[in-house]
Length: 276
Ligand code: SF4
Image (cartoon, rainbow, N blue to C red; front, top):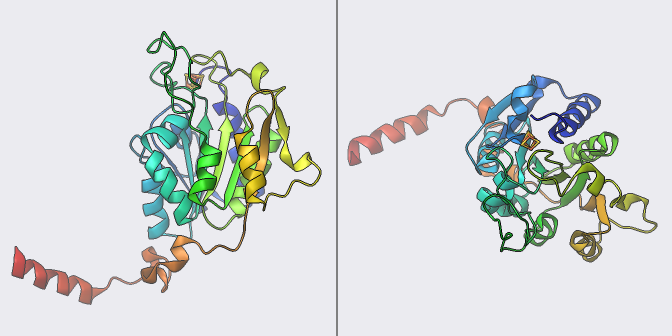
Protein backbone atom coordinates (compact mmCIF):
# COMPACT_ATOMS: atom_id res chain seq x y z
CA UNK A 1 0.00 0.00 0.00
CA UNK A 2 1.18 3.55 -0.77
CA UNK A 3 2.28 5.70 2.16
CA UNK A 4 -0.80 7.47 3.49
CA UNK A 5 -3.31 5.06 1.92
CA UNK A 6 -6.61 4.86 3.77
CA UNK A 7 -6.33 1.09 3.83
CA UNK A 8 -3.95 1.36 6.78
CA UNK A 9 -6.75 2.88 8.88
CA UNK A 10 -9.14 0.10 7.87
CA UNK A 11 -6.55 -2.56 8.62
CA UNK A 12 -5.93 -1.08 12.09
CA UNK A 13 -9.61 -0.71 12.89
CA UNK A 14 -10.42 -4.26 11.80
CA UNK A 15 -7.64 -5.73 13.96
CA UNK A 16 -8.77 -3.68 16.95
CA UNK A 17 -12.41 -4.66 16.40
CA UNK A 18 -11.54 -8.36 16.24
CA UNK A 19 -9.33 -8.20 19.34
CA UNK A 20 -11.89 -6.20 21.33
CA UNK A 21 -14.63 -8.63 20.25
CA UNK A 22 -12.58 -11.52 21.66
CA UNK A 23 -12.19 -13.22 18.29
CA UNK A 24 -9.02 -15.26 17.82
CA UNK A 25 -7.46 -15.61 14.34
CA UNK A 26 -8.68 -19.22 13.96
CA UNK A 27 -12.29 -18.13 14.52
CA UNK A 28 -12.22 -15.67 11.63
CA UNK A 29 -12.23 -16.11 7.86
CA UNK A 30 -11.26 -13.02 5.85
CA UNK A 31 -12.22 -13.20 2.21
CA UNK A 32 -11.24 -10.68 -0.43
CA UNK A 33 -11.28 -10.27 -4.18
CA UNK A 34 -8.90 -8.27 -6.34
CA UNK A 35 -7.74 -4.72 -5.69
CA UNK A 36 -5.50 -2.79 -3.30
CA UNK A 37 -7.82 -3.33 -0.34
CA UNK A 38 -8.16 -7.01 -1.18
CA UNK A 39 -4.57 -7.53 -0.06
CA UNK A 40 -5.70 -7.06 3.53
CA UNK A 41 -6.07 -10.78 4.47
CA UNK A 42 -2.37 -11.22 3.63
CA UNK A 43 -1.49 -8.68 6.32
CA UNK A 44 -3.19 -10.51 9.17
CA UNK A 45 -2.76 -13.85 10.92
CA UNK A 46 -6.43 -14.84 10.60
CA UNK A 47 -7.61 -17.39 8.04
CA UNK A 48 -7.66 -15.65 4.68
CA UNK A 49 -8.64 -16.33 1.12
CA UNK A 50 -8.13 -14.03 -1.87
CA UNK A 51 -10.72 -14.95 -4.46
CA UNK A 52 -11.24 -13.58 -7.97
CA UNK A 53 -12.45 -10.17 -9.04
CA UNK A 54 -16.01 -9.48 -7.96
CA UNK A 55 -16.64 -12.92 -6.47
CA UNK A 56 -15.75 -12.09 -2.87
CA UNK A 57 -19.30 -12.43 -1.57
CA UNK A 58 -19.95 -15.61 -3.55
CA UNK A 59 -16.88 -17.30 -2.04
CA UNK A 60 -17.77 -15.94 1.41
CA UNK A 61 -21.25 -17.43 1.04
CA UNK A 62 -19.68 -20.81 0.31
CA UNK A 63 -17.41 -20.52 3.36
CA UNK A 64 -20.31 -19.57 5.58
CA UNK A 65 -22.43 -22.48 4.34
CA UNK A 66 -19.55 -24.89 4.86
CA UNK A 67 -18.86 -23.65 8.38
CA UNK A 68 -21.23 -21.16 9.95
CA UNK A 69 -19.21 -21.30 13.16
CA UNK A 70 -16.58 -19.11 11.48
CA UNK A 71 -16.95 -15.33 11.53
CA UNK A 72 -16.82 -14.57 7.82
CA UNK A 73 -15.66 -11.08 6.85
CA UNK A 74 -15.22 -9.68 3.34
CA UNK A 75 -12.67 -6.94 2.66
CA UNK A 76 -12.78 -5.60 -0.87
CA UNK A 77 -12.98 -2.35 -2.78
CA UNK A 78 -15.86 -0.52 -4.39
CA UNK A 79 -14.90 -1.85 -7.82
CA UNK A 80 -14.87 -5.44 -6.60
CA UNK A 81 -17.91 -5.10 -4.35
CA UNK A 82 -20.22 -2.78 -6.26
CA UNK A 83 -18.95 -3.17 -9.83
CA UNK A 84 -17.89 -6.68 -10.79
CA UNK A 85 -19.58 -8.03 -7.68
CA UNK A 86 -22.71 -5.88 -7.86
CA UNK A 87 -25.10 -8.76 -8.35
CA UNK A 88 -23.64 -10.71 -5.41
CA UNK A 89 -24.04 -7.55 -3.32
CA UNK A 90 -27.77 -7.34 -4.01
CA UNK A 91 -28.42 -10.98 -3.29
CA UNK A 92 -26.27 -11.19 -0.15
CA UNK A 93 -28.23 -8.24 1.24
CA UNK A 94 -31.65 -9.77 0.57
CA UNK A 95 -30.53 -13.27 1.58
CA UNK A 96 -29.32 -12.07 5.00
CA UNK A 97 -26.39 -14.46 5.13
CA UNK A 98 -24.03 -13.97 8.08
CA UNK A 99 -21.26 -11.98 6.44
CA UNK A 100 -19.68 -8.70 7.52
CA UNK A 101 -19.04 -6.93 4.21
CA UNK A 102 -16.36 -4.23 4.59
CA UNK A 103 -16.12 -2.24 1.37
CA UNK A 104 -13.03 -0.05 1.03
CA UNK A 105 -14.72 2.70 -0.94
CA UNK A 106 -12.05 4.98 -2.44
CA UNK A 107 -14.22 5.86 -5.45
CA UNK A 108 -11.55 4.77 -7.93
CA UNK A 109 -9.77 1.67 -9.24
CA UNK A 110 -6.43 2.13 -7.46
CA UNK A 111 -4.60 -1.12 -8.23
CA UNK A 112 -4.99 -0.64 -11.98
CA UNK A 113 -3.81 2.96 -11.62
CA UNK A 114 -6.85 5.16 -11.53
CA UNK A 115 -9.87 4.38 -13.68
CA UNK A 116 -13.27 5.61 -12.52
CA UNK A 117 -15.23 3.14 -10.44
CA UNK A 118 -18.96 2.57 -9.73
CA UNK A 119 -18.90 5.13 -6.92
CA UNK A 120 -17.02 7.83 -8.87
CA UNK A 121 -19.32 10.76 -9.59
CA UNK A 122 -20.38 11.77 -13.09
CA UNK A 123 -17.75 14.06 -14.56
CA UNK A 124 -14.91 12.44 -12.60
CA UNK A 125 -11.76 12.82 -14.69
CA UNK A 126 -9.19 10.06 -14.93
CA UNK A 127 -6.61 8.99 -17.49
CA UNK A 128 -9.23 6.77 -19.10
CA UNK A 129 -12.05 9.30 -18.80
CA UNK A 130 -10.31 12.59 -19.72
CA UNK A 131 -13.65 14.24 -20.46
CA UNK A 132 -15.21 12.93 -17.25
CA UNK A 133 -17.11 9.78 -16.25
CA UNK A 134 -20.47 9.54 -17.98
CA UNK A 135 -22.43 7.40 -15.48
CA UNK A 136 -24.00 8.62 -12.26
CA UNK A 137 -22.43 7.23 -9.07
CA UNK A 138 -23.79 4.04 -7.50
CA UNK A 139 -25.30 4.66 -4.03
CA UNK A 140 -24.43 1.51 -2.05
CA UNK A 141 -26.37 2.43 1.09
CA UNK A 142 -29.63 3.19 -0.69
CA UNK A 143 -29.26 0.07 -2.83
CA UNK A 144 -28.56 -2.15 0.19
CA UNK A 145 -31.66 -0.73 1.88
CA UNK A 146 -33.81 -1.35 -1.18
CA UNK A 147 -32.42 -4.89 -1.46
CA UNK A 148 -33.50 -5.67 2.10
CA UNK A 149 -30.27 -5.50 4.13
CA UNK A 150 -30.88 -5.32 7.87
CA UNK A 151 -27.58 -3.64 8.88
CA UNK A 152 -26.25 -0.71 6.88
CA UNK A 153 -23.39 1.45 8.05
CA UNK A 154 -20.71 3.85 6.90
CA UNK A 155 -17.52 5.08 8.47
CA UNK A 156 -14.22 6.42 7.21
CA UNK A 157 -10.61 5.38 7.49
CA UNK A 158 -9.47 8.64 9.11
CA UNK A 159 -11.42 7.96 12.32
CA UNK A 160 -10.15 4.61 13.59
CA UNK A 161 -12.12 4.77 16.85
CA UNK A 162 -15.40 5.26 14.99
CA UNK A 163 -14.62 2.63 12.37
CA UNK A 164 -13.62 0.15 15.09
CA UNK A 165 -16.96 0.71 16.82
CA UNK A 166 -18.92 0.28 13.59
CA UNK A 167 -17.10 -2.97 12.74
CA UNK A 168 -17.70 -4.30 16.27
CA UNK A 169 -21.42 -3.59 15.93
CA UNK A 170 -21.45 -5.27 12.50
CA UNK A 171 -19.73 -8.32 14.04
CA UNK A 172 -22.55 -8.58 16.59
CA UNK A 173 -25.27 -8.45 13.95
CA UNK A 174 -26.89 -11.72 12.90
CA UNK A 175 -27.02 -11.72 9.12
CA UNK A 176 -25.55 -9.59 6.35
CA UNK A 177 -23.92 -6.36 7.58
CA UNK A 178 -22.64 -3.70 5.19
CA UNK A 179 -19.77 -1.48 6.37
CA UNK A 180 -19.06 1.04 3.62
CA UNK A 181 -15.77 2.80 4.43
CA UNK A 182 -14.76 6.08 2.82
CA UNK A 183 -11.09 5.55 2.12
CA UNK A 184 -8.73 8.08 0.55
CA UNK A 185 -6.58 6.77 -2.32
CA UNK A 186 -3.71 9.23 -2.08
CA UNK A 187 -2.19 8.21 -5.39
CA UNK A 188 -5.12 8.11 -7.81
CA UNK A 189 -7.98 10.04 -6.29
CA UNK A 190 -6.80 13.48 -5.20
CA UNK A 191 -10.39 14.71 -5.07
CA UNK A 192 -11.57 12.59 -2.09
CA UNK A 193 -8.67 13.35 0.22
CA UNK A 194 -8.55 13.31 4.03
CA UNK A 195 -9.08 17.07 3.95
CA UNK A 196 -12.16 16.70 1.74
CA UNK A 197 -13.79 13.98 3.86
CA UNK A 198 -12.90 15.11 7.41
CA UNK A 199 -14.99 18.33 7.61
CA UNK A 200 -17.98 16.76 5.89
CA UNK A 201 -18.63 13.63 7.93
CA UNK A 202 -20.94 13.73 10.94
CA UNK A 203 -22.18 10.93 13.22
CA UNK A 204 -25.84 10.03 12.88
CA UNK A 205 -25.84 8.60 16.40
CA UNK A 206 -25.17 12.15 17.69
CA UNK A 207 -28.31 13.48 15.99
CA UNK A 208 -31.09 13.83 18.58
CA UNK A 209 -33.92 11.46 17.82
CA UNK A 210 -32.26 9.56 15.00
CA UNK A 211 -33.81 6.08 14.94
CA UNK A 212 -31.75 3.48 13.01
CA UNK A 213 -34.85 1.25 12.90
CA UNK A 214 -36.72 3.78 10.75
CA UNK A 215 -36.27 2.72 7.12
CA UNK A 216 -37.67 5.93 5.63
CA UNK A 217 -35.27 8.02 7.75
CA UNK A 218 -32.41 5.74 6.69
CA UNK A 219 -33.25 6.35 3.03
CA UNK A 220 -33.04 10.10 3.61
CA UNK A 221 -29.62 9.67 5.24
CA UNK A 222 -28.44 7.30 2.51
CA UNK A 223 -29.23 9.98 -0.08
CA UNK A 224 -27.37 12.70 1.80
CA UNK A 225 -24.01 13.46 0.19
CA UNK A 226 -21.95 16.57 -0.42
CA UNK A 227 -21.39 19.23 2.21
CA UNK A 228 -22.62 16.83 4.90
CA UNK A 229 -22.03 13.06 4.85
CA UNK A 230 -23.62 10.87 7.54
CA UNK A 231 -21.53 8.12 9.11
CA UNK A 232 -22.47 5.49 11.68
CA UNK A 233 -25.21 2.89 11.73
CA UNK A 234 -27.81 4.24 9.36
CA UNK A 235 -30.10 1.24 9.57
CA UNK A 236 -30.32 -1.75 11.90
CA UNK A 237 -33.10 -4.27 12.43
CA UNK A 238 -32.45 -7.33 14.58
CA UNK A 239 -34.33 -10.59 14.66
CA UNK A 240 -34.58 -11.38 10.97
CA UNK A 241 -33.65 -15.05 10.45
CA UNK A 242 -30.36 -15.61 8.68
CA UNK A 243 -30.05 -17.62 5.52
CA UNK A 244 -27.95 -20.30 7.22
CA UNK A 245 -30.57 -20.85 9.92
CA UNK A 246 -33.11 -21.74 7.25
CA UNK A 247 -31.05 -24.15 5.11
CA UNK A 248 -32.39 -27.66 5.88
CA UNK A 249 -29.00 -29.32 5.34
CA UNK A 250 -27.50 -27.21 8.13
CA UNK A 251 -30.08 -28.11 10.77
CA UNK A 252 -27.84 -30.94 11.97
CA UNK A 253 -24.90 -28.57 12.54
CA UNK A 254 -22.10 -26.96 10.57
CA UNK A 255 -21.47 -28.93 7.40
CA UNK A 256 -17.78 -29.46 8.16
CA UNK A 257 -18.76 -31.18 11.43
CA UNK A 258 -21.38 -33.47 9.95
CA UNK A 259 -20.36 -37.07 9.24
CA UNK A 260 -19.87 -38.04 5.64
CA UNK A 261 -23.14 -39.42 4.31
CA UNK A 262 -22.02 -42.81 2.94
CA UNK A 263 -25.48 -43.54 1.61
CA UNK A 264 -25.39 -40.36 -0.49
CA UNK A 265 -22.01 -41.40 -1.89
CA UNK A 266 -23.40 -44.84 -2.81
CA UNK A 267 -26.42 -43.24 -4.47
CA UNK A 268 -24.12 -40.99 -6.47
CA UNK A 269 -22.05 -43.98 -7.66
CA UNK A 270 -25.22 -45.81 -8.74
CA UNK A 271 -26.41 -42.76 -10.70
CA UNK A 272 -23.00 -42.38 -12.28
CA UNK A 273 -23.07 -46.01 -13.46
CA UNK A 274 -26.53 -45.46 -14.91
CA UNK A 275 -25.87 -42.25 -16.81
CA UNK A 276 -22.16 -42.00 -17.60
FE1 SF4 B 1 -4.01 2.85 -1.53
FE2 SF4 B 1 -4.55 4.10 -3.82
FE3 SF4 B 1 -2.06 3.28 -3.30
FE4 SF4 B 1 -3.98 1.52 -3.82
S1 SF4 B 1 -3.18 3.05 -5.24
S2 SF4 B 1 -2.44 1.36 -2.19
S3 SF4 B 1 -5.80 2.47 -2.85
S4 SF4 B 1 -3.23 4.84 -2.17
